[in-house]
Every structure is written in structure tokens, then in C-alpha cells.
Image (cartoon, rainbow, N blue to C red):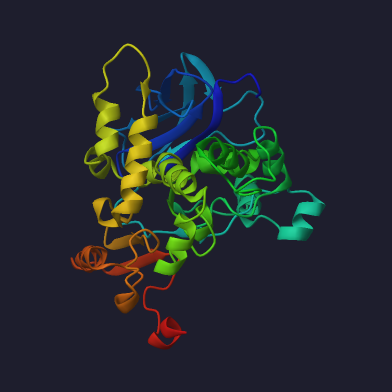
Length: 366
């Protein structure tokens, strides 16, 4: 709906036995409400570079239940849309003791789903899965796990290039690649606005992690690579926009309510009691600069537990050790955290990373 206050989402992110986190991007400052199970939960939007977002924390749900929900913006229902061809979106809470089912994939490009797009990039398996689920041909998994490259900042589609041309000279650096937060925002909109995928993401929990193309091909491949990028006129803007937008669009929803409560920026959001909308532009830009300069200052890796199954999602891009004499996909601090997460008597441990963390030394030196 072009006139809808909703721009992107809702996206059902973290879900456990009694709670759920629902993310959304809106067209303007507003109060977002989720109604389910005879109750309602609210969140005020916050702003970043002129974009508006909210994450609604839903709690107190019954375990092992399926709760249809609706979303409102300033009292107006925005999801599900009127005359939607898809089933009502639901929050399916975890039932203790039930085996975990996950669907996973990576590397999605934002292209059309017509014959031309399918010929160039193949059929979008996520969209095919969404249509099968909507038609009742497959059972819903407990989690959608996206292992990197949800967006391609360095290899853009014609639609993305049209947007770039509308705001700057595409012949100047960085050319067809992304330059700033505004372009990242549009790229995420292209990636997640297809009707079938949008419905799927509104009704199945999801977890994500970045890989190189979320920023640029071979991101942090070596210290020489990083120095070459830092010598360009555009890299600083790219890495700041890339990490800031990743925190908003992907990382925030990865976190459990407890982990999110420890996040410095989320605490600012929850502590805001002013009359106007909280603008986090400067805060997030400074945060992204700090993360790039000091990788140990913030952890992008996280874990989710499903009874006796632990999922560990590992950042193998920011947290790399680029020291030429001691290179590693994980630096010492990240490796210590990873080792700690591997303990605890779980029956199954699932390690999710965009790259193999047990890289053979021969390949390492090649």
C-alpha cells in the first residue's frame, strides 16, 4: 500500500517460549502497536538519517501456542494488509521439548522475480519457500537463518542504480556501489519488499549475520586490503553506513530481550522519554566508526538456545585478526567468547558462520 504508514516489515525476529520481537520501518514518526492474544504492546519509533524504525517487544505469551497478530501505526491497522492473499501472520511460541527445525540460506540479490530475473540469478528459493508455506505445502520451521549477504552493497541491480542516479553522479566514486545510509536503506527496501517474502518474514522468526557483500567483496580479507580501502575517498562513508544500517536492519532483532537490554544504543531508545522522536543518527554513526576502529569494542556474534540445542552465530568479518603474522577469522577475544559458548552440556551445538572457522592451514597460507 503506497499510502500505508508502513514502509518495510513487520519482521518477526527473536521468538522464545513466551516472548517475541517484531521490527518495522515506518514512513514517519509514529507509535507502533502489536495486538495478539487479547493484549497489546507498544513502541515509539526512533529515527536514523531521516528513516523511522520501531521494535516492539511482545511478552507474557503462552508457550507452544500460535497467536495471530495485527500491527497498527498511530491506531491505524497496517498489517496484515486489506485483501491480502496470504494467511494471517502469527507468532508461534516455542514449545519446550519439541525438536527444532531450521531453514537456512545466504547470498540473496535484489532482482525481479520474472523470467529475466530468474534467468540471470536463478529462482529465489526464499520466495519459492514462502509460496509453498502460504499454500500449506510445507510445514513452518522454527527459525529462518540467513548466513550473510542479505544485501549486495558492491554489486547493485538496475533498480538500485536508478536510485543512485536520482541523487548523485554515478560516474564519480564509488560509482554503482553504495555510498551512504540513504542508499543502504533503499537497498534493504528492495531486498525485503517482495510481497511473498515480506509475508514470510512477518510470520516466521529469523536470525541473521553479515558477510562481505553486505559491505564489500573480500571485506577485511587482509590488512593490506583494509589499508587500500581506507586510502579511497569513499570507504569511510561506506563502512560507517554499512555497520550502522546493519545494526538497525539486521542485528537489533537478532538479540534476545535480555541481550538487547545490555546494548548501549537500545538502552538509549528505552530510556527516551522526550516529547519528540529520538534521533540516533549521530549516535549510530559514532558507534559504527568505533566498531570499525576497535573490533573488540562490540560483539556482533550471538547465541540462541532451544532446550538442549544451542545455536552460535559467529561474526567472522569484523572480529578478524588482520595482523600479518597472526591472522585469524576470529581474534583472541572473540575466540574466547566462542569457546565459552561451546560449553554447558548441550546435546547439539550448531555453529553458524558465513565462512569456515576451521580453515585448513594449507588454504590459509594460499
